[in-house]
Image (cartoon, rainbow, N blue to C red; front, side, top):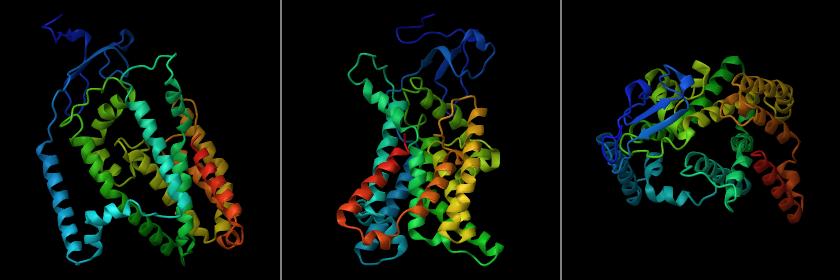
Length: 369
């Protein structure tokens, strides 16, 4: 029944309030076959209070103050000539300068940019469906392009292996089991230390800013947004899940995907990276590592297929978890062993090297499809 021009009264027996963390403005009514359901995945109608204003809370203001202060101190120290690894890491002028500096071979940077653009398009297409695209629309092809990028994370896994092999440190065979375990621990800790600041900041924003300080008025317009900023967000905020997610071991501890948005794909890539390092450092040779990776490739594909089939969804090999990324990483390790060495490439002509570069970039990007 209508209360006024903008609000209606939802009969309590027909509606339930979802248990969304710090989000108590959405009500939904389940389908008739969802009798007594408390959190149906689909509903016949839903009401969402439209937030017209936003303001950063006290916690976010404190965080921004700390970050700006650290950046100002680091920038001032560099400006005065007081250089250290800590001041260089936080100095804004140096970080802006690094944005245009290559972090590896040109081919790798080109692939990284291309894959990142694919990810942006996927999220724009999936999470912002403000209105359906008519079937006769001239822009429908833009929505169809999205399905060509389902395996973009496989491309990131291939690129990750290539970057690790370029440095060559993963093939340093340690002397003994304990030395190998210590090296594996050090490698994992270094990789985690690199990812922790970024993931920590965005996990805080995910839990304490979205829907709390900034309303998401499109929450009910997208299944992905409703799931990630509703059910998954509540699970991520629980300390039992939050701490394993922070250390990127949630899947290892619980056998379930990471519930913290943006962290789940980094967890899958991190675990795959550590697994490839463990394999490469254990055998100590690129060719032996390729041989072992070839032996494990078929079982890895079978494990991925089995895991996906248990979820009652069509298998497409495009998941975020380690078993979905491991087959591509093992294949990249095998292919790397048969590629020509840098010394052999140097003997090639310019035209031949450029052709090889274009073919390599095309193959990496093709892993998205």
